[in-house]
Image (tube, rainbow, N blue to C red; front, side, top):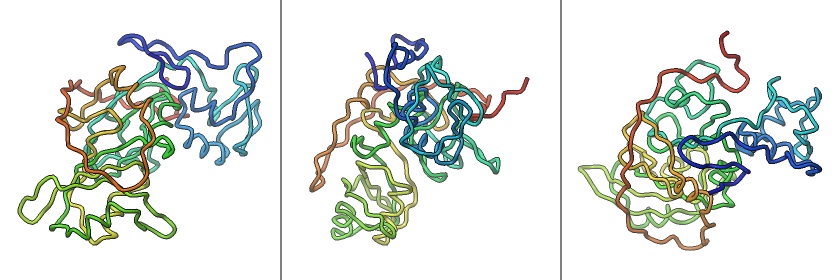
Amino acid sequence: MRPPGGSTVTGPGNPPRRNPFADEGAPPSRLQQVLARAGVSSRRDAEALITAGRVQVDGVTVRELGTRADPVRHQITVDGRPISFTTVVRYFALNKPRGYLSTVEDPFGRPTVMELVPPAPGLFPVGRLDEESEGLLLFTTDGEWAQRITHPKFGCTKEYDVEVYGTPSRETMETLRAPLEIGPGDRSTGAEVDVIATSGRNTRLRIILHEGRNRQIRRMCEAVGLSVVGLVRVRVGGVRLGSLPVGQWRTLTSNEVESVSTTPAPRRGKATTTRRRPPSATRSIAAPQDRRPAWGERRPS
């Protein structure tokens, strides 16, 4: 099975990533695509690295996104560190607890999700869960695969178990399902929203998104006057959180990797109600305590 980006997965060992540009005479590719295929970051984050002036080609800082490069003929560095295609392809799932930032590093020294997964060169979280949210967060060294999860054009669905204060009215539910203004010039494309259960003064909702905007569910609920008590992501594409304990990680199966790679784009229009499937069985592996150096951060000698 071959996921996007020229990577190969055969068995539990996960072999080194092949260089997709190694063919003689291969045409240069866009720089952000090269970085993504090298496992530096997702393509979208690679664009931010370029515009921030952190990428150099043959010693020259590049800031234009249309720049093309060939890593076979050019030396490409990020923060002064050469990119490499010998990175081992990794795909992890973490049950993120509250209190951790979904980023590789934090300038203020706050806890990040990288402290909860095994250290691996080029590993990064796919998308984000805000600090107070919990649940399924994926990690990879495969930038092209990450692009299929985070870019709206691929329609990779994300499912959430959301607890809100009070009981939403029928009108409120319909408003959440329709395209909704969630900020100045920022409009969601609609969501699938169903009531799971009520408990005391609170209501549990299942919300399925076909896009991934910053703090989208919290902003959607705020727009209709609902207060979020708890938010847990339970599925990304075909990958389910299942019984994975909070703070623990596991390696994705080949079928799970493929399920994300082949996620079809959603049909736009009225949201449909879906029946909740039971979570699949998962295994947990104790997470090591060693922290992986951030990209560009030197390992202690």
